[in-house]
Length: 112
Image (tube, rainbow, N blue to C red; front, side, top):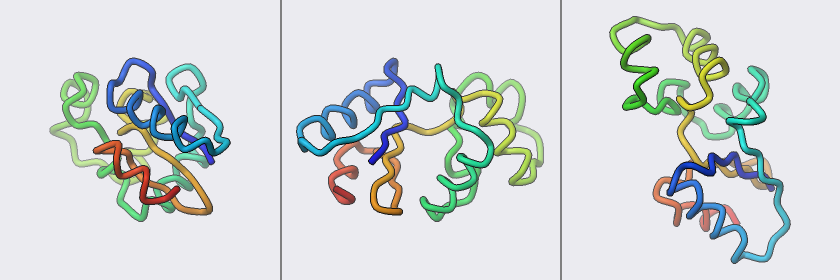
């Protein structure tokens, strides 16, 4: 099991606490310090069964200033997230070939 975590995000910290309480073993990936590769992000999006735009934090200043008014392809959106990891919605938990965005964090319990 993995959690893609941003320690500066309260929802991400709540998601991490849920995993810690579960007593299951998991890997914590601070994707701000250790960026997600393009291939890894594509795989996460497939596991989430969403389109890339659904993983974007659209209220982030980076998005508003650089991408909001543009018509972007899925590949361009993925590239934007790889180059600007703050744009990626969080936390993301992967477990048993399934993935979930922990918003609200309680959703994480559904894949444990």
